[in-house]
Length: 583
Image (tube, rainbow, N blue to C red; front, side, top):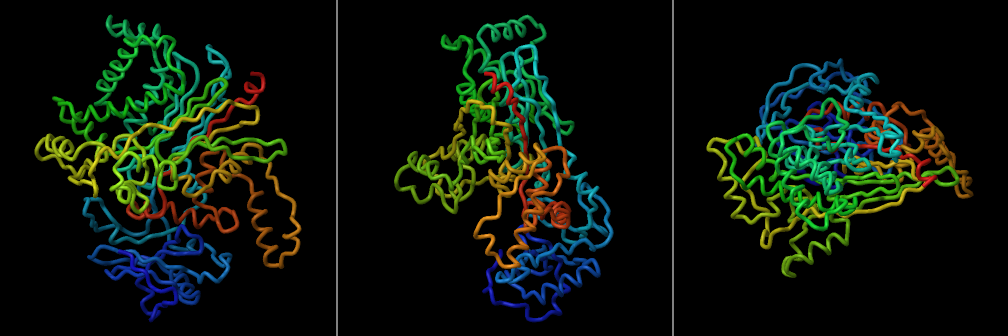
């Protein structure tokens, strides 16, 4: 546990410096050090002591040798009164680099300790020297670029192309993404999904949700044709044209179950007298979110003869996932959001500048309306316990999500379902455990009902950014839109020097010039999603890209990476402004 020490505390003896291995912190100008003892402290070091550590670190690679689990000490590298411009990245000389599963080390890794059974680094030599080629290879390994035909046989497309990318912090990655064209109705669907408690729920939702939405928008006539094809054993017309990355995969063992439940859904729509020509995108998104979450809950409760399908269904239900899905039609965008992913529209103003228009709201404790909604669903006696420490029941940060039946089911039902698993099943390996959140008195505390925004497309609407919270933890809406907009146009607008800036001292003017120079730097990536991820993790004090900072964050061991950053998934959808102009 991290202990806080007064800011004026100094290291008593520089002889202890050799025991530390330094990592740059996400907070610019700060460092985190590992110490192979059980004493942990938060220390603010003088520039002299920090410089001494860095000097020694650059001359040799420190080796950690210990049998006790490592603990982490947070170092503030320079006093807060010093300008952060003093921070430079000094890790480029840390030894030679070898690759192991995308992480770069010197020497041999051995030893492990974890209550959950995960392998942790207790003895390894770490190096932060990555070449630009290696950095690019890591950043671009999951990128995707898809150009969309202007006319698809059913009408003009409002989407020109889209670019997407992912960078994992968890192992395995808990984020997922989806993109598909609706073949039996109009428009395209895009989604980003942020899993928690494992990747299982995000995986299932990314495979299934777009199907539910597309089916809900289909007319009764087309649904009847689908049903007849299945009844007579004929090939079923495709519902979606998927755009998959080669690393994407599906739950093959559960495919038949997923199809069966999708069929039950469209059978119910056929029985509805109101369905007719199909739901509007707004109603379809709302219905599909709620229906899929209900199916996930039901599938975990029904008996299966196949043990793998049963354990998968339970794993999906007990894990959780937030979701942000956009339907892009010929004249409108509909965005459905449940949780803390986000959709932001990039708008080109008349003066050539870029502005950001949010099309979703985060469902977390920073959203006052969301806090009031949740408290209103429970007795006044629980008003102080429903959300504590900015988390639902002190545990969960997003306040809406798929799955997460631990916050929806009764305690008795949870115990019954977990007890139904075959004897000998390793619950820990499935991210399942016997645990009830504190003050769990009047469930459910969580639901998936999305907030939906409808936006009529205008000629100035140029692109849509969908991102999981790992992106928005690092970049604001305006910053992200400006990065993509300037990447798209190749033009970097600089505001005129204001009267107050003309009165700057020399040092302040130098800082301003550095910031302007950083903005005008050419892009390193053709893919805008990669461009965003690179800037989210590698931006220095003045907006410049810091190669050493980026390299150090990309080479952290698996058990440390999540302490510094979250999984990041980004999709940038480029809109056909000509279509909006003529409509």
